[in-house]
Image: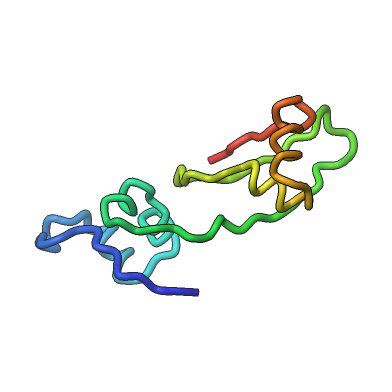
Length: 112
């Protein structure tokens, strides 16, 4: 857990802000925190460096699936090295992860 003072609006009257958004900021609304806290454009604009890969959850889709697919939820379009996450999840080397992706043994789907 960490905190970071990320400027979203600068030198703007609260009257010019969207009322629902302003109230969400006051409540520390989780959805708005994720929306702005993971906005790649905003982070780049503020020279924020992300040092960690996102957390992941492994779920088995069952054995009756047509093919082996790994789905990543990335609603804020962060730049993620999926081969690195796959290697970590499956406990294989990154070169092996790249090989299974290139050979079609495994495919990646990014969902919002």
